[in-house]
Amino acid sequence: MMTDAWSLYDQMIAQIPEDVLVRHVAMGAHHCLVEAECGTGVAALHRGGVRLRMERGWVGRPLRELATCAKSWDFEVASTGVAALNAWHNQLGRLDALGLIRDAESTDPFVFLAPIAARMAAEKNDGSRPRAVVVGHFPHLGAIAEHANVSVLERASRADTDLPDTACEYLLPDADLVVMTGMTLANKTMPRLLELSRGALTCVVGPSATICAPVFEAGVDLVAGSVVADAALAREVVTCGAPLHGSGALEHVLAATLCGRAALAR
Image 1 (cartoon, helix red, strand yellow):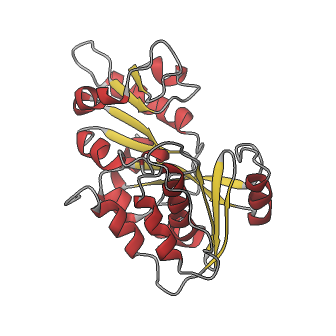
Image 2 (image 1 turned 45 degrees about the horizontal axis):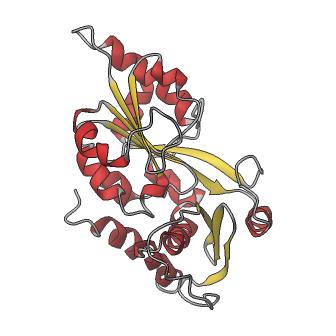
């Protein structure tokens, strides 16, 4: 349970040792990348917020200090801070203790969430359909929509049916299933979204998704995120301004709480 909106960020940052140093920082057209002594992390580049610009000269400085940028109101700077968080947290050696599911049939949330939505529908005794709320505009929602009423919340609407993100206050408290982009950490909406989603099965998805104990303790049940499988390739892709999706630089992973595992196994 979060005591205040910043507690999630502070707990994630505090778990990074003070003596781990930054080796390289890159900001491309689509993603940010941070290489540190402990590994490499990435995050989607989120534009918006105030215009502070990213400070230079991070090489050789503490990774924990760079991770505090996740609290910046310049969302590009915050995205780099999230990449720094992921350089520490999103490493396979740490994820086994956090419920990494190595034998998952799929790490694609819009594949493994569809049967969960189907089971939710089957358990409805009044003929109604479960309510799914997706924060962020994603493709391939059709499989979930076969079994649930899906509402998409998007700050920058991409479809006529997208609802403004302010609809979260009205829809999330009654949702059965909530899917949110990991970019909600950078834009500071994640703490409130999780608070509103306490009655739902909640999944955070995407390359920005940080996989760590504070996220699960804040109310997330499933995280479908990524670890950097090829750091050199990831650096090349980000530096060239190309998207990481489909590049082969990332390994998609799935981690879950006991509640999340139970939902997958039923």
